[in-house]
Length: 210
Image (tube, rainbow, N blue to C red):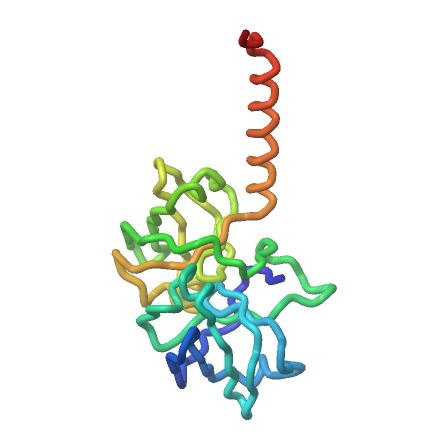
């Protein structure tokens, strides 16, 4: 589990495509190395990956076919990624609970920088995921916990403040690029429960067919 609070932007020092997977090596800052062990979970651009190697501050990960098919890691175009160590019991909950199980990729359809104060980014989410996102609801994008500002059909607007842009990879992205997103699991469960309850009620009220 993660909080959706990006702790660092880590350079990609090696990326090797091998049969069925991509082997990534990242350069971790010293402050995030304490207690890191093989098998530990780390959010990499929003994707939960397990540590496969540690050599000094060089940390290795494997992104397998299932991960590559669902996320942007298969054709990642940048030289650095957002990272977050898994949360520990007692940590402050500053974002929202994020599993690192990416729902899919969303396409950036608009970026509007109206001033130095913030940036508006518009994302088009594929169905069925769009039905789980609401104004003022949570959405994790590239591992960052964000609040949805506006909803227009399947296009969702998020507001990025300068500090978020400074501490993440969002400044690298342009219109047409894809980002990893994860819908809020509690919201998804609530929507599913309500829809099933409404469907069951309507079926009971419908006259029986002869």
